[in-house]
Image (cartoon, rainbow over all chains, first blue to last red):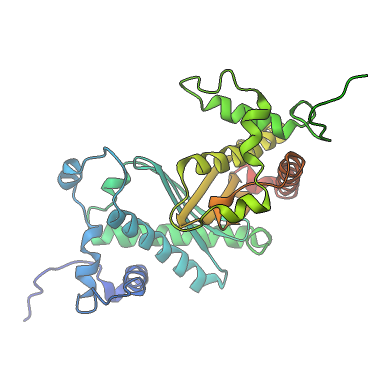
Length: 155
Length: 155
């Protein structure tokens, strides 16, 4: 009998969405900083507990590392939507007002993801399962919009 | 016989779009800096000749004043679209890559304006007529999109 050291219902191997995040991080690693990091280690910063969130100040602008993490999350959504629908998806993150802003993913003239961000300095999820679940929910909803309004997505 | 000192085909009085830009600038003037400025003076920075553009460096990020000018331009478009259609319009300007980025105006899930920006440090037009013409063109095109896809704009 083997005992798994960190038993989780979801891991990178069985979540297409978590794989897509990892792919985004590795694609934006020109100096090979993460070359020897495991997928799990790359995803670790996406898990931020409630207690940890309370300790992160929401004063001032969002630091570039957190911004990169948010970007990789929404780019992973865009990438999964592209894979499922064959439609090119663009990502725009606008964090102009001290942690407030927008995360948008669009195909043609259709906004397939439209989220307001607040306290973006604290961006993160309770667990890796939650990351995967939230990502998959947004991918599904985006794909549904494209199926509902194919003409708008193709402009 | 009166001679007009600066004869132009378009002025603020007969352009709803130029009026909308002025309104945006005055609305974002908490300290009353522009209180005694004429509308013409407020609009002057929107006119940047080709020779002036060549002198503006496109190295580095876009300065906050230019960013504010771009924002007021697209907010004026959003405001004119709101007036014509009664639909709430949001503006997102994303200038992340040294003068490169996106200007987006959206109603519901519909992108009514979707523009890539480049060399945004040089944002400006040959003349006030061109500012008015470009703005009105984008407003008209945005209103057309809403009329074509009212369901998407109302989500």
